[in-house]
Image (cartoon, rainbow over all chains, first blue to last red):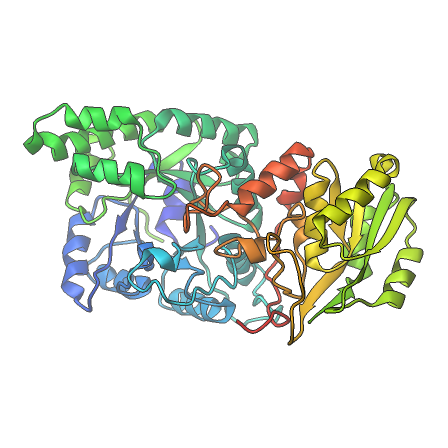
Length: 310
Length: 203
């Protein structure tokens, strides 16, 4: 094993992995994290805490990870974006999270500051996500900083990256995934999947390049709470692909049943992506709806979660 | 003002070795410092077969360059690679006019204080000092990508547009399109390393 990561062990054992997102609060309130951690505990192999998602100021990912851990929730995945940190700050944070005993990190470029609540901020983007993956890999495996200098104790992090099978240009999404793999990604968490046909096509391209044997791919899934949310994602969220059939399905049930149908839909998608060769697990993004996670994981037949003692 | 300098040989030679070269050299405008002697020495020392070479002023003038391209059409047709020795704008003009050719530059463009000259507005060179366009199909992601990604496109490119502004084209879509047409998507497999930003103009 490269790290002490529970996620790495679950994946190495060939178990179908379950990770979930935990959204940190827009305040200094630790209770929000504690409440969500209690919900997720026992239902996931690892959990991501987002890093200023949609460029809105929220509690730091690493801090929320530690609070969740105090509630017994394992195994934190710190998300880290290049939007707010240059290579100096990134490396300092990488050393810090590893020293705190965090085993996983997801490398992201980050949502553009224009979309958030501080749109006049200066974006950093000193590195991009692929360069960040490579930098963490060199720190871990070569004990080298980006400048080439050596360090005494390396950060042993299981390295994640994201990929969006639904963005354009479609034909270049898999070659770009290959770059992330070449840079050193150990696992991939995808954008939320609603268009299973397109995801299936993308996975075929992934297998054609043999990438599923080099990197563990976790399919991104998320329940939808309302018809309005589905329409919003379809039209307003860049890089999301919500087919009309999804909206029609949600419209086909009485209003008070929509959120239930959204959960059913999520379970259906899990069952479909699970059948696709090369999908190593799911990443559940129940945004501000962590309560839905236990029900989904159980109904999808993914309990109990395997236990590994690192 | 801006200054042009010849890139290190180890960056250029692997791109053009042995191949038939057609060279555009811009002797500059009043606002650009162009290292005439160093450039001439660099070009004359190239071991590659040179099928044609043209030196002109104002390579940023699209109409003007179009006429040259017509006049040298036969030689350009024979070329495997077009090498441009000019500021970043000249490179973009040539690559946009010769979309069926791979266009490389042997120059970096640096920012100097003062009047920036009459450079064509539809082309974008940030004078960043470390020209990336040899790895991006003659289009500049430093000037044209909202996140200045060197390994794009990000996950927000949709329908050829940038997520940050739907009125703006996604330059990485254009890069993929252009290199795809040339059958040279392999160029994008390279992992673009972290950039040296110290030579960029102050922002």
